[in-house]
Length: 323
Image (tube, rainbow, N blue to C red; front, side):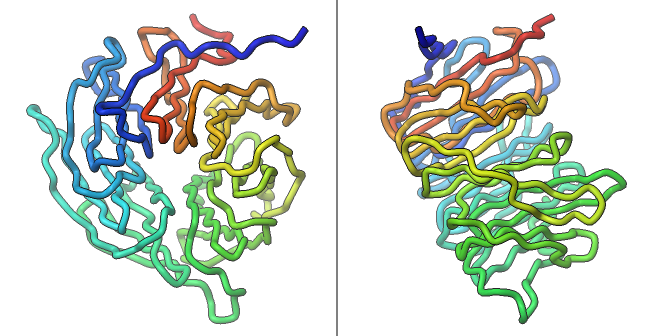
């Protein structure tokens, strides 16, 4: 007899049932643990993970919040239409410090190197711009003239390889995945994928990554340890097509996908087999994130998912070490 899917440890209804486009955990000094939800109505709602209630409402703009990150002292948001805002955390809340207006109509989420305080921002014509946290452009990644036609960027993933080798994976509209060396601003490897990539993630210790797209296949790829070459490894089939987000857990044991069908699928990195399908959401899942440390209320690393149904589900899955 098949095991039934587990229940979430908690389900939050977003304020006014506003659709959730992005999520980020925040662990601040003093033990404040929060989950931030970027919403369709232009607000970021900060939920206290001790009470699971809204602790703060941050008005960012009028457009949906497509992506956000939180550092120890800053909140960075991305609005639909290409507006990025950098807020500084103060004793009374968040103060907007800088704005980047890129006039980019796509849905590609930015990424960041939080150690060096740099942002990787998508733009038209296959370009990626690099800004510092003061909103100043410091570089751009532009494909060579002899590169294949790439189209607009669709997904990004910053990776820090050993020996201070910072890399950026970029998936493009025409189905290409490029690996950029950020020290030289040069593309060092290319991989033609089967579909337009919608989301990409990579686990450094596993030396493998995955690509979600509009099809019923998750593509697994590798990056060579010596030559940093991209290679397609195999395909993982799913029942219903369409993936908005793929996300690996830090420990390299499992990874997740959030689908157009509202399903969250959990896979084993060891076997690449599907472990469970979570069907709590009633509309498309827009984001799936893992906490970088244990949430004290559950004494576990928590997975959070948010969707167009206005629900945020919190999960404790396959965590055996809870000491």
